[in-house]
Amino acid sequence: MSGGLLFYKFIKYTLLYHFKGRINTDLFEVVCVVITLQLSLDAARVAFNEPREAFRQRIIEEEKQHQELLIAQQAALKAEQDKRSPSPKGGAKKPQSPVGKKKK
Image (cartoon, rainbow, N blue to C red):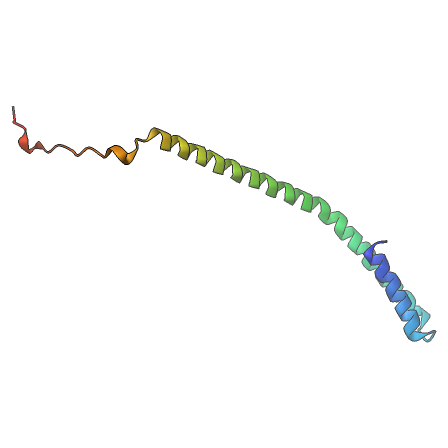
């Protein structure tokens, strides 16, 4: 049983118990119609929102995969750059000053 139908039955029995026959039958019928309309509106809302939510989730998942791919590419590029660059252990050569050179 759906939650809406349980709600409908709850309202129906609550009204019947509370008024114990004193309730105007027209009022009771109006309440039943309103509850039925609300249930059908809720069902239509779910039917409308399900495809939209599925599309939204697909777009979010694609974006997540794209971000993960970019991160992996950046990590691979950084690893490649680290592998190509010389290690700083050997020390950097100092540039020679032109002071001691003779001019020709």
